[in-house]
Image 1: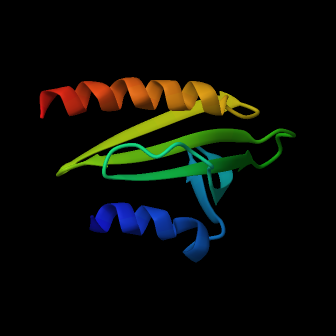
Image 2: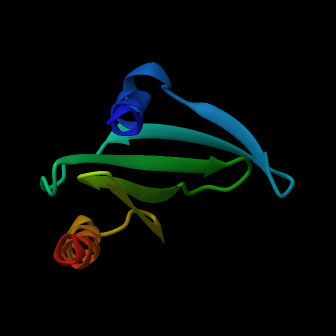
Image 3: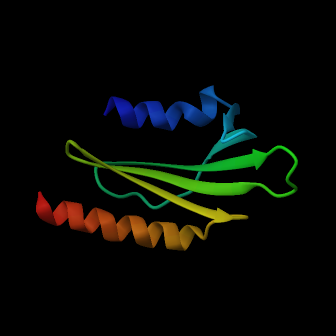
Length: 102
């Protein structure tokens, strides 16, 4: 449960962070993503990545769903903004597979 709580605190405790990835300076900004509840616990974030010198940001949906002791992580990346309905569909399909096995 601790990893889920830690992830849920990211938007409040880390308003932005910077990294150099492959020689590119990138500023990341995390925000809470309005998302359907699944499993025992769900955390969903929208991570905006702005590459220095480029006009548009890239957005990623990062979703974690806990089912018992298993944590499912989904990352959905797209130019502009990923479609939340697609992210939910992908996550629900993966979660249902995990839930059936346990």
